[in-house]
Image (cartoon, rainbow, N blue to C red; front, side, top):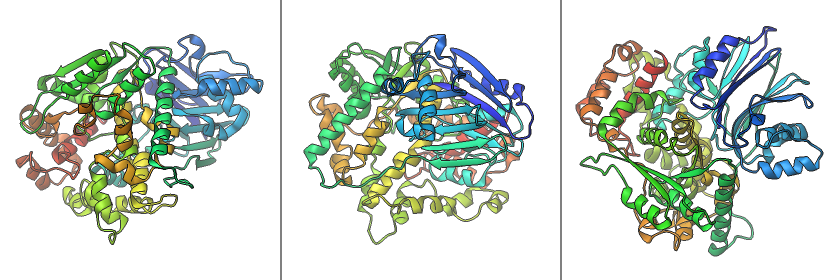
Length: 595
């Protein structure tokens, strides 16, 4: 897990070393263990390393294989690197390191672009082929590792974070009207290639991009997820056996691909608890586990320790739990927002930030339960969508239960200047065809695929990456293992949504976990103070939205802001996000990155 950056020139000039240094400095928290640079002609690479696999200097990056003429910077982990190493060694390749980075170099030499089909893991990498003078960029199937790009006539730059690109200089921070509407409609998610800034893009998940020194570009998607029933269709027992087998394999591979101890972020919900149970079933003892809680609000408890403690006792884990006061959360709120590579709205971002700060004192890598709800149908809105009248269009069944605001409300939120920049509804135009895409048997199949491959990328997945990497902590997500997801997407939606959702995981957990953990309401790391805004949190928001920078930006309609400030406990999205927090989170992030 690391931070990568680089520059490729198209104008026969050398890359800007000072810009590279500024990007590396901005990425230091992602890779605190070591750093390196590489320059050759039109190309420059930078790397910040977090050492997880092969802790020796042989695995330092940028990694260069002079015999093959290839140089690589890589962020992430390849879980099947040992198997690939054996396969490549059998083809005659010789290795000088013991990690997964060198496996990518050899795999690219052996298979070219098709190497991506062989890689199972979370990754974003840039590879320079000195012989062809081409730069090859790629991102994993679920976008677990970020890759931001900015390009003009003279050069391309890339980095693991958007602020790192801004730090390099020469990038306008003009807001993108399309990205902005995604931001406020999909609760903080801006699907690739858009970002909140017009001149910064993201490489889409499951995609590669190849660029010559003259700027000629080729790009493609290398993986497509199908959500169809197999023929002949298995019975329920066969489906469940398949999921259990794939989940056990995913947990094992995510644990073994590390030369450091690996812990578990234990919320006390089904997903993280099941990870602990499967590790214990595989013979792991004294598993380090970590939970966090916050102060209660009248409407909601601020911790779920009753469940995480029960799981920790049941399996005898090395459990650590952290109870954060409102004062500590409020003190750290600006830093948590600043750690976001893009502005994010989910309230538990701050929980992940503070939890990662404490966990890094104990371990360098953890497993997390993100992805299970999207893959196995754990959210309450899926049954609501399924029950909506079939005479409605897919978008009409989806939007009222998912979109944070209608297009009309979004326009009312903006000042006239920004309304003029906003065209028709780009979010609906993006979502509608994806809800009617081929290779899906039903509407809900398409919803679950859209969530797992697109919407999840810029909400829970980005949250986990940003907040943990702010402290140089690697978070792994076994529920987004490729083979597991492909198997889960063959299950009938009714099977996944049975018993309130995630039926296959509940069935697997029965007998492994206490029934109270399996049958409890859905769990997470609650941060109710950012949902029910009072006291210092409300004052923080009021100060953000009345600051001179906010007024000068002229984005929000003052009447809309005043309406929300007058009733801070009354304006929630269909997914129960506080709309006032949304406005303040974006504005504070903009004030931070543009300071």
